[in-house]
Amino acid sequence: MTETTDQHLRIKQHAHDLFMQFGLKSVSMDDIANKLGISKKTIYQYYTDKDQLVNDVVNTIIKQNQETCNIDRSRASDAVHEIFLAMDMMLEMFRSMNPFVLHDMQKYYPTAFQIFLNHKNDYLFGVIKENIERGIKEELYRNDINVEVMARFRVESIVIPFHTDFHTKVKSPLAEIGEEIALHFLFGVASQKGYKQIIKYKENRQLK
Image 1 (tube, helix red, strand yellow):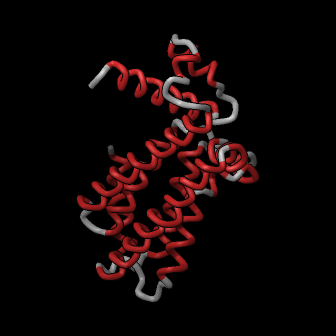
Image 2 (cartoon, one colour):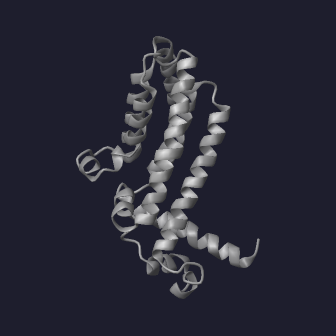
Image 3 (cartoon, one colour):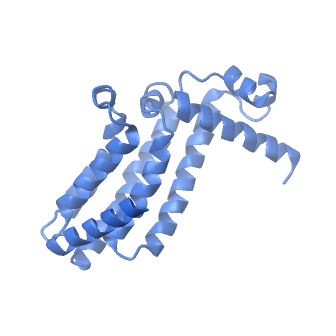
């Protein structure tokens, strides 16, 4: 790996950390440069403007999440286990994420927001739909579910914690809200057999 590549990765990683902590809008290129102990001019050797940097950070987050999700799906024992693995990944991300990130993205960085929407509406929807179909085959989910409706419902429910009208009125941490909504979905689609499986995984998590 070249020194130039190392510098590029350092800029992107520190930008990511600041964006997640403080939101996209409030972090300036000067903030990122000061955090790194470099000049702003150095950042502009790699990025033409902040928009391009935000796009790169969002693309990287999505790529990493998809890779982790694909691994978790392949190693999941069943559909319920798959959801719990996805919850663990989501909770890890939410613990360090400013709830205004998505709001800032939608309002100020439309290209990045479109990247996110494509991920949500294509990749996440497909993964959740396949999970529901898997759960029905394994008799862990009810067989009377409208798969398309519930998959779309779950996709949209993932972003509920980031709605300003929601997280400004609910004082619970973002990760706690995300977990509560995910469990609500899971119990809603579960069969009697699936309900027992959910309780088992839930109890195992609490023991860790």
